[in-house]
Amino acid sequence: MPTPKNPPAPALHAEPGHLIRRAHQLAVSTFHDTHGREITPVQYAILRALQDHPGIDQVTLADKVALDTSTTADIATRLEAKGWIVRELLARRQRALRLTAAGEAMLQDMLPRVAPMYHRLLEPLSAEEQAQFLALLRKFVHLNDAARAESPGKSRET
Image 1 (tube, helix red, strand yellow):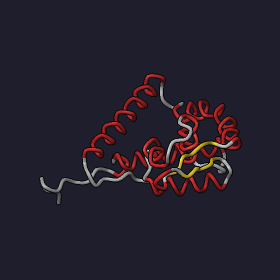
Image 2: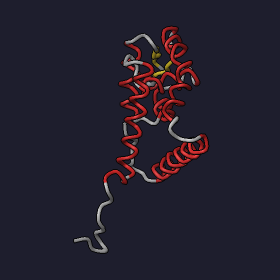
Image 3: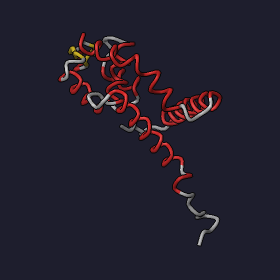
């Protein structure tokens, strides 16, 4: 029986974590329906970050795409094996990353389908609801990132 110290758990479909996980599943499914399975959404994010910031090191890249450094290094190794990026050794074992011509071509092929993909994903919402949803997502991520930055020992999840 619930007590004031132990309130009843909310229904599963009302729990924020469950809803966020389901929204992520929908986004990933839409991504794969649009772009196939040769590239993942995280690999795409890394390629986009490198397009915007050519030559950045892996630690900075990890921060830009909100991944831990070891996961970023693993993904960078896979992207290099696919021929989409090059990693140049810097001082203190850091690596500068850049898109290759093949990586740039992959992005150029994908980019025309990105906006229609997100339109299809958000289409069930009205234009006003889409704007509210995206604003709340940005706020949610920003505030939680800021709170994590203030709490030492909290690492980024993959």
